[in-house]
Image (cartoon, rainbow, N blue to C red; front, side):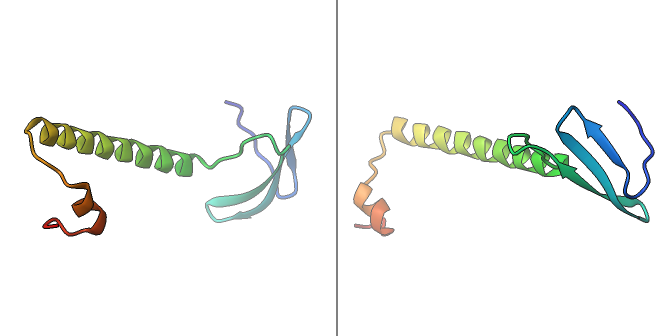
Amino acid sequence: MLVLTRKVGEQILIGDDIVITVLDSRGDGIRIGIDAPRGVKIQREEVLRAVTEANLAAAAADAAGADALKALLQSGAVVSTEAAADGHPDR
């Protein structure tokens, strides 16, 4: 990892077409601007991690639902598609 000290207004160049500019420094945070070609993905790590965790949780919930459905079908229970469609289990 390259560690640099920069002042407001100073830039860092990555390759030939990515420029990072220090815009502001306040307290324990800084604001940076990133100028990069459209094809370069720029993502905040914490947002990407949250999306990944949510996707894993959704996949686990789907697996649990699939297991419950398999068990129901194996038990010989009869499920009416009409009841499921209109929300009334007695029809």
